[in-house]
Image (cartoon, rainbow over all chains, first blue to last red; front, side, top):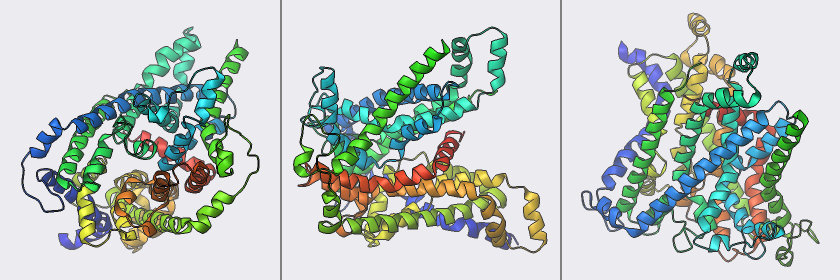
Length: 289
Length: 273
């Protein structure tokens, strides 16, 4: 009886489930086993944790880790803060034509990342770039942005802020609108001015949203790839923008070191997993009101 | 005081707005310039002699129509597949009973935490063995199962009252008929949101097509643009900007007209706790 009874639900999930097994569950496990081999074009043999030991000693890998952390831990606070600031300004009752502003701010989020990289490479051009022109209006001399190892990563971070603050802004706007109006009414009765109610009502109640946005953005930023691929000719100058995923890509698909690339994938997985756990933890402790 | 605040807020918003829009404006202006017109300093915001030469070059002397076709075929196929498979699975997870339902659902949700790069190498080697490199199916099949899609539609379907479905069952409706005639029409907003997100995600995807499509005739638009950006055309900025306009405009147009669904979708993912 049970086989017949459950055959219909099973038919409904079967198409998705088959694809999940073939392209997700099994590959996740396979990648781990691959990371324990020296799999390349010539075949594979078991090397235990050899790849991970090699990664720990690989100066290029530690460089890519450092660059990725730099990008993430500088880029995420700046992106989230700009998103929060614009959301608060847009949410103000003093502002009309909100839709126009929101459309403009969100536009970069939907734009193709490759195109963004190509356009910003042109904006950053050290001789004819719009950014050089803009800085020179204020008599600031423009660095050789993407050509200078010191400035290449800040340049990529600036572009990432431009592209992503609209995403945080939209989530913050939803969070702001979810705060019950009666809280502010009560604050007015208690004699609080708008700055005080912002400090004591808005900010604390936005905490779960902020944590969520931070962690989602962090996970995304850890996977930095297209920007250095496009803007700095795959990680230059002198590896100053080489990211973990870019290094994974090079090992897997340029040098065909499938085992080594799988080990990099698992290190990335581990880093992202920690941040996903943090996310779950904070959300469970979310504020109820 | 209120007026002063209003002026300050508007001033900040307008400055940010201009800064956000400038790259788009510069992209379009540059795409209309000639190769000589592009290299002027200070930059010229209105081209001296605007021309569509760059677009003509992309479409006639280069094979951009092929890349556009590739992108359209892949994007539309993935979107249809994701909508169909996710709505089927979403219905089962929301409304049908079977053993292991909750555990399986949690397992699916957990895959959302795994970065896509983890599965890249095994899936690449599998597709290579199946002969699906440089094949549309190599891009379409792995994208067909969407944990996000199943999750989104399940949440939406759960709100549909069971009484409605039970009444249909008493009238002798099969589960598939219920899914098609009751569930799908009621889920239109969620399906539209998922459709737009899948369409945008697939159209914009770069990492996976870059790995799977190594033959030029199979490039999708982002891969073709990246290739143009790195090769002998690296300093033909007018041509690169025209390419960027071609890649971005379908999604930008879609966004301007279907904004509600984009914003709704983001807010939904934001509320997924």
